[in-house]
Amino acid sequence: MYLVKTENLVFEYPDGTRALDSISLEIREGEFVGVLGNNGSGKTTLAKCLAGLLKPTSGLVLIKGKDVKRYRRGELIRIIGYISQDINTQLLNVSVLEEILFTPRILNVGEDLIKDRFDEVLSQLEIGREILEKPVLSLPRHVKLRVLLASYLLAGTKNFIVDEPTTGQDWYHSIKFVEFLRRLRENGGTVILITHDVEILSKYSERVILMNSGRVVADGETREILCDLELLRMNSLLPTYTAQLAKEISIENCVLLPEELIRILGFKSLHPSY
Image (cartoon, rainbow, N blue to C red; front, side):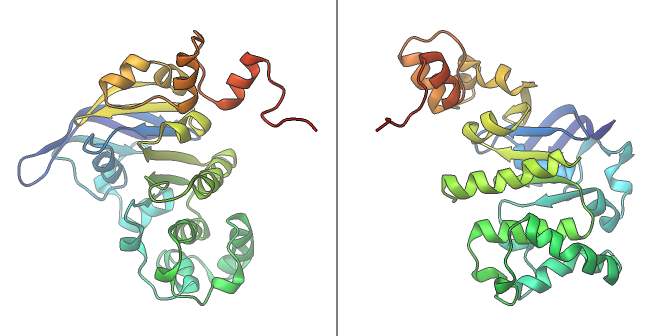
């Protein structure tokens, strides 16, 4: 069963700029899909259309078989949560606690159910109780992302569109947050990750939708897309660092991840033994 489907989706901004041009795709429930492209490729506009935040100029966006325009906002949030690249625009409360409780309360989730889920959600996302009374806008970006995710999870949302969560973060916190998303997917959720980061996608996504100039130029298994170095070059994207290194040392096989290269070269470890 598909979660999201678009049919000839077109979106034009008021100035006439066509950001999406005849997009037709399906994303099934339980997938971890990366939407890949450089700035201006249309991936954020697509994300907002899928989340019901922008109305298509023409074409259809279907969520579980129903036109996204026919959903009430709260009804849609229960199905699919959207986390913006500009996270501060979505944080509407003063304290962390108020922010976490905001979505479940506006969706009329019962207080008993909130109480039952609360500790589990905090533990799942490694949010300490010591920050609950802190101003949410004072927190680092990686914590803000977890706070917003916690609010959705407390409301019962299982599927997520997440726009460029790794922007402005170091590798550790980037991996940490995407690990949270991976676990959600393992528990039956769906993740649509909007990014320009091929390193993250090579490690986590099972499918990549490649966009350029408002069009889908490729859609397939992650390895198929990220191993096509000419396709990446034509769309102004670099391959993973490991793929670049493998090419420089004349390894013909497609190598995306460091552990794959280590295996090919016959190294048992990157660390010397003493």
